[in-house]
Image 1 (cartoon, rainbow, N blue to C red):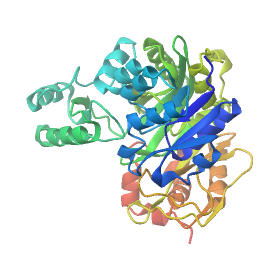
Image 2: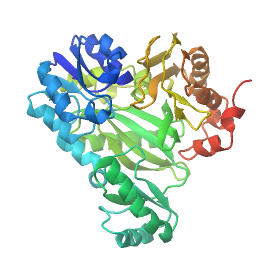
Image 3: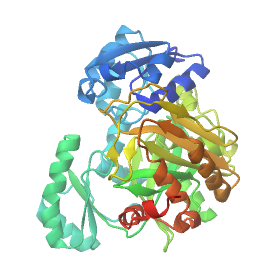
Image 4: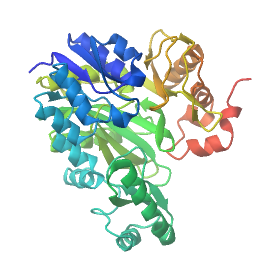
Length: 457
């Protein structure tokens, strides 16, 4: 049944993004907000809005009962979770369905299966998707971990079975490290996800992080090609590209085909991302996880394929089949997205919430800025520091970087410290310009003082 009244169970730029996609389809939008977010741009743009609680996320955006109560009160017939918060909560998806509404995303069972990294590895293996050598199931004890590590070889990554975002991960170079780090990883995973389960993977040195954007309607699935997300700080993505210039065409096709096979194996419905590590030397790739939601970096795939992924999600959730076959999807040019955070890159990326005293947004061919800012807006200190995403599209990677430089120089956000200086410095670095980087490249680059070296006096 087509969606008529959509509740957006999120905030910030993704809430604005969903509202605009929904309005283009003629859907009435209902925005939830915390007490700290009453002046948020999404509240102003939505057709209706409703407060769901106190500023801290646990009292508002992470409170399933309050979100569901708001949806019922506003007579919503569907809920879009965005990314983060409750987006990958199987309990939330079930709660939405229980009150007779549509959850814009995959089924609760799929979220649960793919959210548990051990279960996801087993499903991927069964679907013929290469996985990183590691433990077959969860690790029950440190002795079991030591036995598995001896079999697969050091170094190993100790990883949380639940959750993501880099939490709960430790890299052990030897057995002494493993025995010291496993309890730490377990405690961190328990605190972050309420689940202290662990598993082991062989640590691949200097890999590239490649992911594939997929979309499914519960029966069929398609891909929108790959993205590279190797520029990371503390396992958080900083700069994303579509496509991955490190791949040859045969590897690209194989990678994308395995992502579709995995999506169809779990009867995936909605937008999702299959993430891989790629060993450039051997040209081998390995599945690491599936994100059962729209991703922060989805705009680069939209720019290169010309398809609105959020609108496609809403249409599928409303009962329509995929609007495109794989043969209908082609890509043109190259796109880059950089995350603009309210952080001071010269002070160890300290969060810098404050009042936006002025705003100049770049425009022009191939330039897009997804954000939730306006002059006079006070950014609250309670949430993630992401305030916008600057996306550019060019004929090729060199053209995209040139457009990115111009757009970064034109983007002006007064009253705040932001990560714009970091991205400008990266656009001047020879390794970045040549595409010679990996997941462990950025932090040593920062430690060596290259942020300051890359700035224009």
